[in-house]
Image 1 (cartoon, helix red, strand yellow):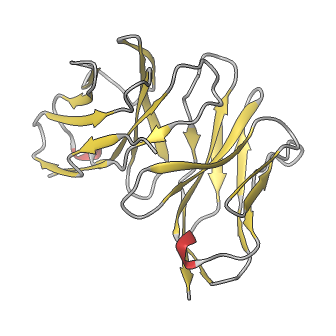
Image 2 (cartoon, each protein chain N blue to C red; image 1 turned 30 degrees about the horizontal axis):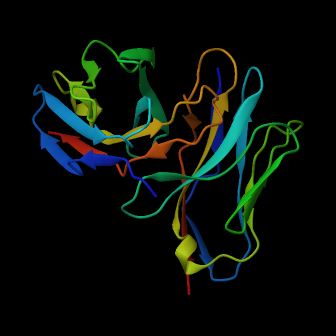
Length: 116
Length: 115
């Protein structure tokens, strides 16, 4: 089965530094997502991306966050100035071209971000 | 707002035991309901889903029935195996309101099955 690939699996950074989390969605998918899970908390929706623009974002996704699809294959999440509370597992997901919300999401295995 | 509550873990069972993981939801409108599973070192995978009241989703011996009257979607399996050890997430998605693909998850329940 095709896979969503995330790199790195674990990233450590200092508070205030910029980080970029990378994802390679499944090649013919059109909708892309980032979620995160703080340890012991729920998996939370951050942002969805379609047709080279953000289609929806949560309250968490403030000005410190940005997403980009720089080259038609990668999908990145940038945090400009990391805070301690950004420490979490970040999941990338993608799905195909149907508008239905019932369509299956494919998730990557996540990037564990640790902000020190 | 919309939310999902699932039972706290971890859950530890012996092989061939019966499994229930409770999940209840709060939603305005008509959600679709999902169970996702995350095996160690892997991403979340869709396990089963139900899109309307009284639907039963099933896969790999797991079942869950969409109960509108109790706003529940409990996950069950009659006889668990060691290979079922994973974290299970209940989730919902709204069909209307523009939230296409935006899943609302519970915290996840870690299941450990011992031989």
